[in-house]
Image (cartoon, rainbow, N blue to C red):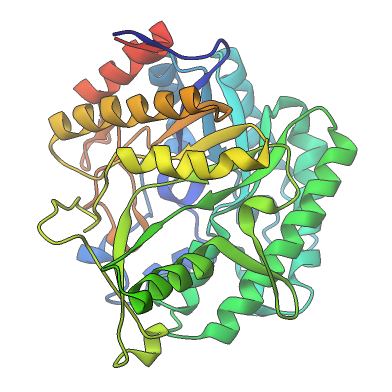
Length: 408
């Protein structure tokens, strides 16, 4: 059967500046990757995909694949290299980038913070510091003033709960803290404040440009029907789905002030109560037994996307899938995944969810943070020696779906 998507549906991909641009030495992630053992295989983003210089080539490929949108981030540490000092050359660069996208028929969804922060900001305490949300605002205002006419949609903050958890609980992101619940609370609280300030500033300048954020939606399922396992799953879900908006007051991240709900979804885990794990809030998380895992060690099931989307229906807002994909070197697996995943997106549309766009993670194989280059999410392969781009069969498939605005 043919599954037709709504007219004007956005078919795009997502990327993040640090993961693709290369030569970004003024942010916390560059300093982090200089520490031995932080990045798998000793990989480095010194070159990454050289998208900073090859963006025209990359956008030409997206246009060739009939995409009509692309989500990218503009790098704070390039635009404001020192506190209060703005680099007009870098602003011109991003104007060229966004202008090229517009000429190629790609609507830019611009993310303002995607896991990286300038070193001057980190030296002042980063996102744990009092007033960090206000320190973010000169950058936001400058981008809004100098780039806003080219922006199609704004995404203020990328996956705030993941940023807090990976940096202050799991220790895989800078600053590499482990089990620091107080630090995570401060970070997510300040990110919440930053989002609200940024949203207000963007809407003052560009009232007709939709603005929101991207929330990473894990699915946590109880390992059994026992009450303690159900509570363990609920507790894990609460930690990732909510952020503090005041002392003792937690709100769902998707309830933040916004014009749309942006949701990233990749995987799910089982949860069981475990009294031996106080460092993990007495919750043991594990993959469903016997399930196949991706290169990230995740279990990704397309049917879960329908569940994630249906949970958002009650908010009555447009929904954009800001990230979704699968890390695999077997492109036939990715082809099947895309077809099955988009089938479930269409089922959610039939359920009444107002889904208006899908941004596949990612367009080109890139620097996957602590995993380096070992995880392959891209629709386009990048030769690590020559940086030559090669569209994968999954990329051609996605292009055909975008062209038809339908699944056949």
